[in-house]
Length: 365
Image 1 (cartoon, helix red, strand yellow):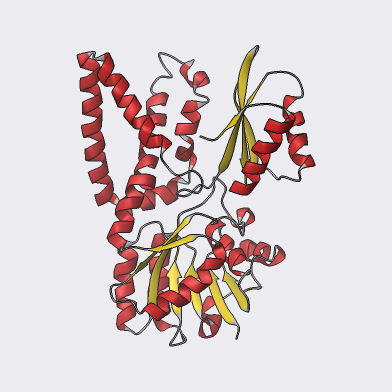
Image 2 (cartoon, rainbow, N blue to C red):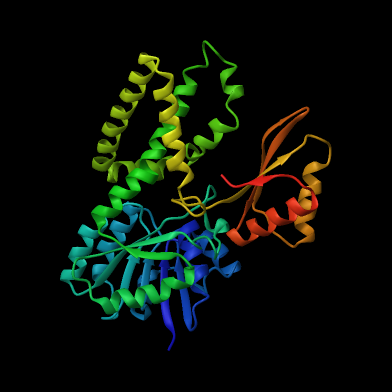
């Protein structure tokens, strides 16, 4: 029997979910976006089987409804569906980055006999919009579900049986656990990245050359500061209590660093960096919050044609790349070429091909 899935919001996340779920057997994907051009593109690119102009018109057919919209918009949709004609067995979910407000609203739906299970795929891209949607976006990323207490196991099983076609790691946590953990590893780092960029800007008057030197490490550390400011305004406000606590802890940590510097204790400072390195080196490699990138670093000498040589090796092996950049390239010094791939398998194949054919050293950071 065909399962009908309605995806509301066909941006990067909603579009990628629609594409991924098409891999499930006997599934028909309906899609809606308030932007008519997005609906047209979603149809043209086969991101959905059918784009609709009014989601309410097909809601009675839906077995699963997924909101691929920002949290504030999702809250509005959750209020709207109270008046929709729905199947008694319908399961509704979302993809929002914060869960407290969503799950409070879900309690209102439960009181009406409507099943809502919160969701958040912990992957994304520096690109946005339906044209950036990819069926493999969530592969090996965590897909967090936040059911209300006492949610029926059969409803969880139905949703998970569908989401498994995203090839994500589906886990269940409470809304509080979700918001705390994402504050630590995703939301707070965005604040730190933005603050570093603001600090750089203050250098312009006295040391204007500083901005010209802000490549390599600085760009890598602050990459997420280029994210959508409206999206991150909403996330920050929705999770502000957790973020205030993170800021307080960060300020304590910076006070500790200041003390180490004032004491001029070389051993303590080295230990500080060593312990951080040990923890960093143990972090999982691969999919992470909001940006999934499988990067391969290649030490390359600076001579004409070296990049085309390497990309030629990859083309010979039929290995696709998603991006490449030079971190450093100076005369007579090995530069670092960073190549991004769609998945871990392509990265492994690329490393093998480059080391075998060019003898260049490769490593993963």
